[in-house]
Length: 345
Image (tube, rainbow, N blue to C red; front, side):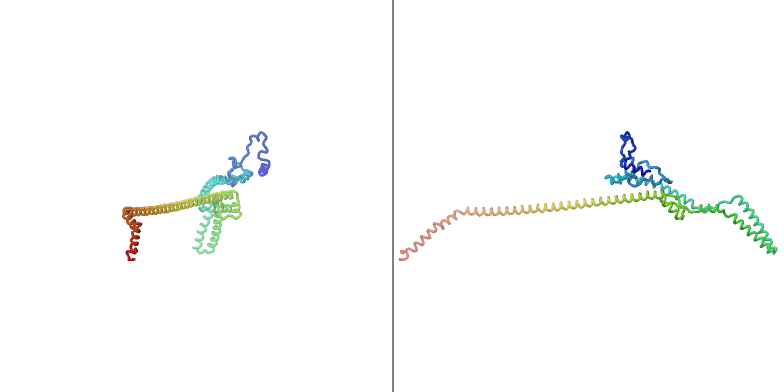
């Protein structure tokens, strides 16, 4: 019936049976509405696991709809909502397991108390009276056997001993429990065990068919799914934490490398600036030395020119005497020496 209803809802819509007036106030339910079961959307609803068992949680108060679940799985928001829904389901399942574990602890305490040996059932009043009569007969016969043995009547004594043995057999049969009592004692003496998955009491070393029936039972399977989901969720959560930790460490390492790189670049830049400043200082020193050399050269030139100015008269006279005038004097002297009269021509 539910499958047919779901099929009709898929084909004709969930508002197919509403009147026009009812459709005006009708609101289409979406998978992210509060009325929809988030547990059913993401994994399973625990209310569906224990129906008609001792752990029945009753019907789920929220909507379970296959069409809404398919809409959720195809939604672009699916990956964003899955962690939130799984966290809510894990919280609900952990509460179930906590309650179950308390029952398991109480079951262990009960088994520890029941581990004492079962005493035999007491005899009834009728059997107690019969037992007293037999014991009295046996006592009397043993006294007679003793007296016959002392008087040498061995054959008679042996006949009485056979009666005593028969009475002892009756006594033993009387003290033995009946078949029903044996079954009850056997049942009580059976060792009980406790299922750690679902908390059910079992008979230790029971038949394989009964053990298999328990393992495939709804309660055992349901609590197995709950425990497996919690373990899987915790493992995935721990894995995400580890990945986030590694990502943070990697990011911190990248920032450290970037800082080291920037520091190295800054040091190289400062070194280049320092070298450039040193080169400029060296160039300034060289330029200063050139200026100083030029100044010294100019100073020497001025010194030389100054000395030339102070000795300029004498120098000019000497040049004039040894220049134009000196040349004419030497020419006249040579002319006189070559004249005919002087040489007798």
